[in-house]
Amino acid sequence: MNARLVFRRWLGERVRAARRYADEVATVAPHDAYANKFHYFGRGAGLLAPQGTIYNERYLSIGDETLVGPNVCLTAGINGEQVMLSTPVVSIGQRCVIGRGSHIVGHWSITLGDDIQVGPYVYITDQNHTYLDPDTPVGWQTPEESAVSIGSGSWLGTNVVILPGTHLGRNTTVAAGAVVRGRFPDHVVLGGVPAKVLRHYVADAGWRPGPPE
Image (cartoon, rainbow, N blue to C red; front, side, top):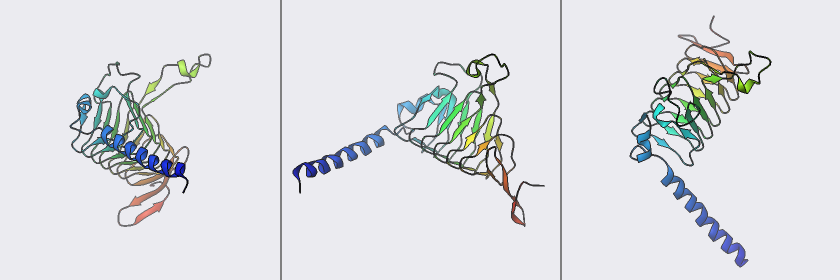
């Protein structure tokens, strides 16, 4: 075998091992000093490495046994110095999993219940820019906030977008790629752009197509 190829394989194995070790060491656990910056950092919780953008930690709450995946963005306000009107701004319950590359961007109130599974690259925000003034660039217009809540036991598929003012009931399933705004009851399946109820659960009758009557 070519000596250069042998060396490449040898070096590659060690680089990968070093990367795995670095990610393990860089994972934030409750006993780490950095965890003390958060409003709450629960027992058994973890921020897996590499971490995404995280700031204004004192307004962020992470529940017990919740795992936040690599490259996840968790923020409150527009920078780490902003004083918010309430705390926590972003609250994630117990035993949740936040998938790789997701963004939870809070300005007013975002609440995730317990036992929620968030797929990769999900975007959740409680603030949007307005477009009321046709003569002012949209990005310069005053944004509007509206609280968001995700019911316990819910599942958000890959690339779901949760817009301001959304309130999902318990055990809600949101199909991949859906864009969600509005209030929805417990035990429904949502999908589409904009998202609508595809299925709902009826006690003693099981799952039925469409929204509840």
